[in-house]
Image (cartoon, rainbow, N blue to C red; front, side, top):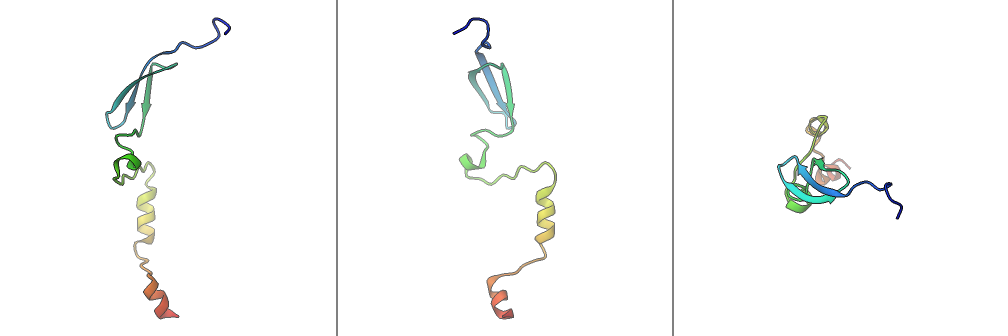
Length: 77
């Protein structure tokens, strides 16, 4: 390896928005993340909607009045 061209590999603390902290090694000393294995829905089994622009509420408002089921479709035909 050539000398003085590689970044330093230092201890790193990864901090999640939920408060979980993980110590590892990286070229950066501090990393902040939004989701981790303690709060991600895939690992916890709980549904958590991360919405930053109000898209979920807009979707729910738009489709709240539409309640079409398969029985209703069959009766119309």
